[in-house]
Image (tube, rainbow over all chains, first blue to last red; front, top):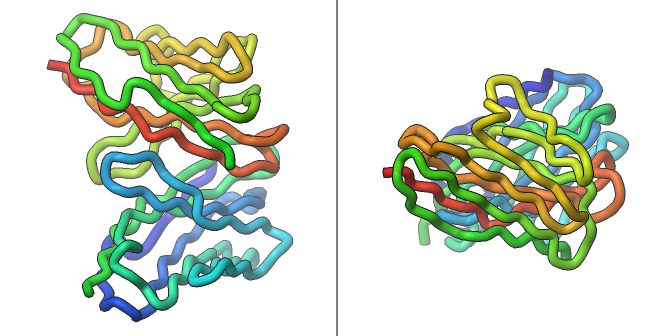
Length: 112
Length: 118
């Protein structure tokens, strides 16, 4: 089955700096890669997603890149703000299953 | 946008009792819903896939007789933790796809239910 690894587990940045979180997946049949932000005591919130027919997608300060050959995808947050502090999860889903498999999470702290 | 509502947000129960958690899609119909479990500072682990009008599909290692899932309508799935024990204490989160098949659609999550078994 699919296995998703995520790094780093914790990330501390200064307000205004960029943050990058990386994930790798194992199943070459995976074709959908969402990123979720989870605040304390709440469910995950979808912030951006990318499909395998696209290499990069951007939404304001957030961007995701996908390297299908290397089975890597990354989340990029620019101009970080304290309210970006949360746990971020990557996930992957194969075209032949509806199961979403999550990475291990990254705790991002943005210091003012 | 697509909204998934989960109730209750937290519950405390005594060991040996059963607890029911509801998951509702408020502004869309969901033929498939998913139940996840999350321990503190850990990732989300898929427990089961809830299919409207049919039996749920459980992941390996998840006891179907302990975690009863019912998906009686296109907007409601329930998870019942039967004969709960302290080790069942966890954060349970449901999710649903907002359009058509979940193969091609993003999943939206409820705000979770924190279960504490004393």
